[in-house]
Image (cartoon, rainbow, N blue to C red; front, side):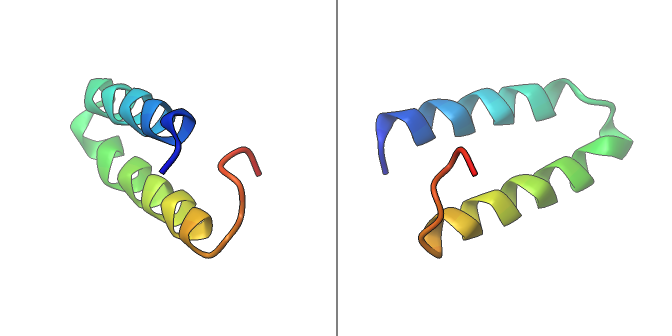
Length: 46
């Protein structure tokens, strides 16, 4: 994993932690989908 991805994931996790509890599951789900896309070969910025 590149440093760019690690930094982006860290920032996103911090952002999600600041969301209201009710909004966190959807945000974590979106992050999971984004990570799966990266594992499937897409770039993080897509």
